[in-house]
Every structure is written in structure tokens, then in C-alpha cells.
Image 1 (cartoon, rainbow, N blue to C red):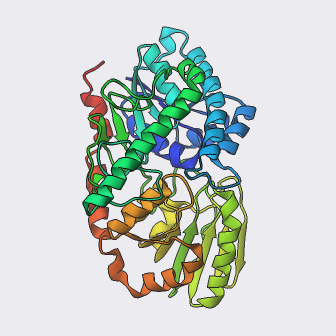
Image 2: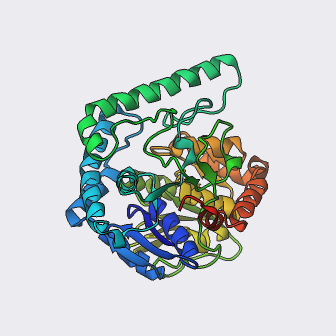
Image 3: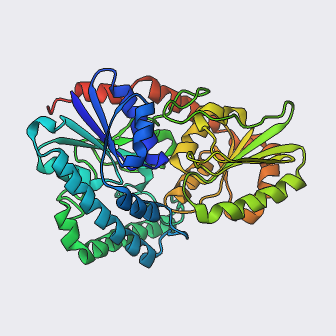
Length: 420
């Protein structure tokens, strides 16, 4: 079968797509479609890459994905971000239509990251099967349970909480409808004349298969869309170099000492210097602990070392996360599941988007501490080391991750698909 996998060039979206592509390439003809900056990683993974868009579009995408401030649920910031994203999506859709202009250039199946809904619209218009890849299942709307993007809501424990959740779900849908109405002309041109289908499901996700790249054991109870399938996180082999990353020198580990990895992911540049300043102060206050801060910049090579503090350009999570005694992270899906796969205790300090929802789920599952204020970093680290029982849920979640991945659900879904 010919399968195209589509993702933006950012680690949290591209890396799971590359992992899926490597898995499927053993039995199928696979291509990875992304922007030019992603092609080097695609090639290092041993895959066929097809670049779309240009340098100007990439700069726009970078500004969208890594703004100079938090977006959260700020209506005007979300509006500006969406407007810029729609412009890029229109160019992306045109490039995809050009690629698929001839029937012999079209795949049998498109698997597109959820941030590229235009890919699904183009595929649907051309009669190509389309599945959605979703690293953060919590963002899906549901008829029950706490909605996402509301600061990290937890399950309702009484009627009042459940009522607030219901009102929040209504507010989410009303806001989305209003935004769609404002941009309805451009949305319709992208193949999204409406946000919701007749059955109430969200039109930006595939009605056939939504591949949830996580485990249901971490999620709060809710009624999932019929198309959703939990296939587990798509991660490189633990303890080995990630095949699509450029090899680099290892972090410096000190025998007999405890090590803490601190990461805010590949974006969030506006938050990193301030957070690292706190970490440097913490390194002075806790001289018996080694602290490693990573900027998440795979294109850089800096590695500063002062006392028990290191600032590294990039740390390969798959290769090194198991060496750390504690991880402080922002709640991104990638590092979240790397920690669960390695059963590493974590402190989650969410910064934006769905990271607050991930923090709520991790703390509820007793797999991490939720740090709501960065000023409390030192007491949180001390507490994490002093009270290991806080992370009692880690073994069960690690087992759930391993069990889900071991069954190779993606390969099975593709092999069993009868809609061809």
C-alpha cells in the first residue's frame, strides 16, 4: 500500500510521525510530507521525504508555533494565531493538490497530524482515505468530562463541578463556532465549510480513524468518538540514539550523584531564560544535585557547564531520559510519554496550550507533581526526592505503555482496514 504521512516540522508532531513511518515502511511504500527543514530528519530515518511550502512559509509557521508570549485561552491571541495559520494552510493545501494532481501520484492512505486539517480536506476531495494522528487525545471534544484548554480541569467529583464542566464544554463549542464564522470564507476554501458533522463530531478529525498516540489509562473517563483508537505513544527505542537526530556529545553525568533534567521542549523560547535562571539559583541551593537544562534546539551545539549546572542545546530523550532521577518538564506529549515509558518521576510546569491538561492527568494518575508556580521549583524538587510515594502510579502507566506498543496496533489497523 502507498501511504503518505504528513506533519509540521516540530518535534512533538514530526517525531511520532517519523516513528509511525519507520514502522509502516517495513511492509508498505511510505512517504513523509513536511516542510523543507524537516527533510534532513526524514532522510536520517531512512525514509522518503517530500518537501512542501517554502522558507517564507516556514518563518510564518515558526512565528505561529513559537510566539513571544503565552497564548493559552486568550481570545485575541488565539484569533491572530488562527488567522496566520489559515494563510499557511491555504498554501499548504495548494501544494498538496499540486502533488496529487495526477492519479498515479496519489497514495492509498493519508495519515495527517491533527494540526494539518487541510490535508484531510484535500484527501477527502480527491477520494483518498484519510486518518488523523493525534498526540494529545485530551483536546478532543466529548459529551462529558472536563474539556481541554481551560487551565487543566480534573474530573468532576460532585454535581456542581460537573455543571461547571458542562458549561465549559458549551463555551468551548460556542467560541469555536464564532471563530469559524469570522473566518468562514477561508475555512470553506480549505474544505471546512462547517466545524461539526451532522453527528456532532469535529470535522477537522478523520471520521474513519483517529490515532490517539497515548494510552487510555492516563486519560480521564469520557465518551470518546467512535473513530478513536489508542495506539500508544510512538517512541524510539529506550536507551538508544533516536535515528533521525544528529548524533551529539552526551550530557555529563557524575557517578554517585542524582541528576535532574529540565526541559520546556522545542518551543517556548520566551520562557526558557527565566526558567533557567531559577534553575541556576536552585543548583546553588542544592549543590549535591546535578541539574541539566536543555533548550530543545537540535540545530545548535552549545553545552555550558558551571559547577553542578549544565545548559545543553539538545538532549535526546530516548537515549538519556532513563539516566535521570527526576525530570522537570512543560507537559509536552513527547517528554511526557518518554518519562512514562522509563518510569521517571516528573514535575510538570505547564506553559501553554494543552500542557495544563496533561499536568492535571499526570498528577491525578500519581505519575507527576503539577508545579503551578515556577517560584515553587525548589520545594517541589525537594519534595519529589523526599516522597517517592507521590509517584506510585508510574509502574502501572509504564506497563500500559509497554503493553499497548507491544501489540503493534498501527500495523494491525492498516492491515485490517477494509475500506480500500
